[in-house]
Image (cartoon, rainbow, N blue to C red; front, side):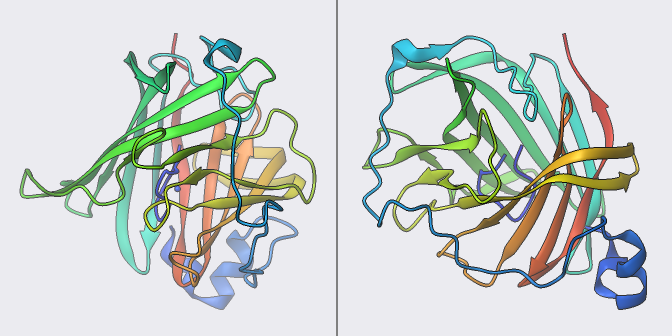
Length: 257
């Protein structure tokens, strides 16, 4: 799942106290820092050519750090630059065919402080036989007063030169960098594995042995975020550490059917 300010996405992505140094020291997971290195080098020299074979994808997404069973749902709350938000993510029953792959549809709805939806996105994910979860695109809609006002950030792998990326590795390795998506000028998120043993406390509970990825895009170079993933649950925390500042934390999780 991708709480703001990801795509899609990113997200597959904040508490006001993060903006105050004294409160930040209490809420920040152990071993983290508010200073981040922006540039992530995926090691492809800009010549990104992923090899995607539809025959090598499986029906179920059961990666331990990103389990996407039908009906599963996650609710996140917090603030971004002082603005209160709620983010609801749910795995839909329908599928979407992208590049010949039957993708799982995950709906991500962002609500403002008044409880009104401001962004509704359908993200498309699929898992290969090795266990990597691929991000195949998104249909994103900006909403105001119940009406769609824009579709910026939408893209689909295989269309207009857009290419899929890996949203979650099968075997995360410390220091590993990778592209999560690639649609030049529109969707260029990258990630790097920065921790494998983090701990944190969020509204949904306490978690340890967390995977932490640092995400960045050259399209918004000031914005950097760290995402915390728990086995069997998925994303439990997002810290916005540069540019936009804030914290989005898991408040409710339903594993689905």
